[in-house]
Every structure is written in structure tokens, then in C-alpha cells.
Image (cartoon, rainbow, N blue to C red):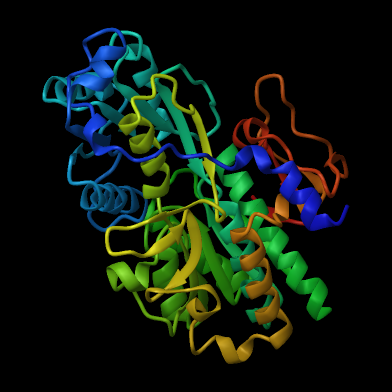
Length: 420
């Protein structure tokens, strides 16, 4: 059996069969009712998102906000409401307030403030609750956990970054060691390694942690250090401020973005600095929840880990995958900066196009293709120590389970340079 067929067979379980869309089965009640009739009785649905941060000028909450707006545009009977800057101490009060006002799908867009929703899931059996996954994968019948396979787009970004560097040094301004960060960084690093192998050149990836998601001053300092002391000429981030992008623009080096097409949607910088970004379409994940809701499904799929193979059609007819490389509203190889593209060898451009196409068809995945060899650094979890350096945690041509990737990927890949 060839590799593509083995991949399709291995991943058959990831493909979702969506029931026929019947708008008349939308649920509008507060969720306090019991029994199947409560699901089928009402006709309107309200999607409520609790955003952990402000929306304006952010790539994370901004992308979630855009996603919910796209859902409301597609489904006339779905209303979108939200609260901003929600901490874990007010998650339940805000959720219950929104439920009283008619919300029947209530989501926390970060794990630390979304997890408390599981504590009221039994109280409101006819409400869907949801939370983004950071490392905890706890679910209940009506408590849904979700995350996009961003590592797939990050792998493509790594191919591009590995081809662009002339000094052979790439820098990552990162938040702190956690499963989400380690997993996403691994996807990027595998892309860099593959580019280096194809081009026959050494490339070093430096990671330096700032200690939190949003520390603009410290992020600027770390980005400046990476450029000045480590001769980094391609910079990316696993943090949320615009400081690394500012430093890239000022120092005239390439920047690789995350979470959202900041040039196309926010007008931040330009393609003279942003070589490429990846764009997250959280609406594909919300679309699955809404469709289950419309189908009166009392037992929805409770762990959604969707990627480039999973798509939805927007109200304007655009078909989009959950994640994709994007820049100035262009996608795929066309997303690469017009200024950067001539600097990238044809072999890498061809490989980017090939791998992207294969991932959209569900025929290839970097986490299936490559072995996971521990760097000996990362984050020790309860009952899961950091594997010692050189340990083959996963062999090539094997796919880890979704729960392992989401909850137990706690180490850096061998070859990364983690700066103190």
C-alpha cells in the first residue's frame, strides 16, 4: 500500500460526516429544559463567545470575532453575542447571563477561562458549551473542546523561512513552554529542517521565551537581541503583541506571522516585511458545532481538531480550509510576498505547493511523516516528564492520537536552540 493510501486509511476517522442542514431545527431556548423535545422545539440559535482579551487589534480574539461574524452571515437564524476581557472568575456569571438572554452555544476562546464552563454543563443540559484546548482535553456530553491543526500551516511557513534565511539563523519570540506552543513550534521547525535538507544548507532555529502571551516591551527586547546578537534575519513569534513585527520592519528583516493575515485584515506593515502569515478560520470549528445544533444532536462530537482537509463555504461562496498560509488576502504560494518569492528557490516553491495540496486532500501530514526526537527541553507535565535528549518519542510514518498531540506534546524537537 503506497504512502498516500496508508495516510488516507489512517485518517479516515478524522473525516466528518455532516448531517443535512435543516434551518427549522435551530434551538433558541435558554437550555434549562430537559429531554429531546427541548432541542427540536425552538427556531433561533445564539452563539456566545467569551473572549479572554479585547478584540480590536488582536490576532487571536480578532480571528474568533471574525469567525463568529462569518457564521452569523451564513446562517440568518444564528445570532452572535460576546463579552471581552473575560477572566476565569467571571466566566460562569457571564455565561449564565448570556444563557438567560437566549444563548445556547457558549464558548470560551482560551482554556484558562473556558474550562469553568464544564462546571455548569450539567446544569444546562440543552446548551452546548465549548473551550479552546491548551493542554487539558476534558470533555462532557455537551462540553466541546476544539483547536485547529495550525501546525500544518506552520510547517509550510517553516519551508519558506528556511529558504529565505541568508545568515542561517531564524528566531522565535515565544511566550512560555506549554503544549500548544511546543506543538506549533514543532510544525514550524520541521518545515525549516526540510527546507535546509533540500537546499543543503545549515539553519539554526533560536527560541527565547518572554514569560507570557502579551508583553510588548519584553517582546521587543527579545526580538532585538535575536537580531543583534544571534544574527537572525527571519523572525517569527509565539506571542501576541506586534513588537516582533515592528522590530522586523525596523531592522529590515523578514517576518513570518501567526494566527491571522495581519497585512490583509489589519493593514499591519506590508509584504515588504511580512514574507507570509498563516490564517486561522475558527469558523470551520464553530460551523461543526452549529450544524450539530441544527441537527438536534444531543451527543455532538466533543473533540474537534480540524485542519487543512476540513473546509466550509462562506456566505459569499468562498470555500476555505481551517488553516492556510495567507498574506495580503492571497493564499497558497501566492501568499508569499512578491518581494520574497524571487529569493526562494523553485524547489522550495514547488514543495510548498505540493505539501499544501496534499494536506488539503488529507494525504500527507508533517506529524505523520517525521519522527519526533526529543531535544531534552520542554515542560514536565504531571506523570509526563520531558523525554531525555535523543529519545525517539514517535517514529516516522506514524500518527499520534489527537489527545496526545493536544495534551501531552511536552518537548522541543532535537536540534532546536532554546536560549535562556
